[in-house]
Length: 181
Image (cartoon, rainbow, N blue to C red; front, side, top):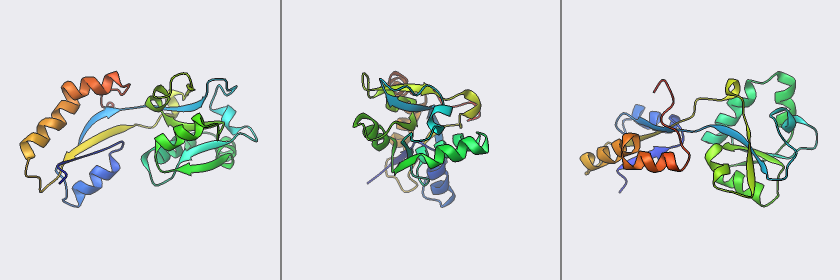
């Protein structure tokens, strides 16, 4: 039985809360988008992924990494955004699948979380996404409404926010919850 749900987004936990399936979600971490590229890539900017014949991998529009990537792209001038979307060769179900495509040489670039590039040292590097294009990325967790272990589940979530688990998340490259949480 599941007692805690956690997501790389606030959308799913918020919907589960509205449906009465979980208690009020708590934001516990944040992340940033980057353009993941192979170490030897000439891509150095967001504009570079708009260049013709650049193969790009995005997350599917139904998953957090895909939603965030599209939010970022929507902040660009229309012609640049259109050129980037024309370069999309694959849409994946999660960020790790995007990272895998990049490490296998199946694409020139992918929009991923900063932590995904950190997980492939020596294979990938991160091209920064300017702050003006960064979506607010917050990870949230919630106690399942019918949990038999509510106090333990609440303690676990608290450890994600400010305890031992929070320290582990920061060591892994995640930031604290973004401002406004």
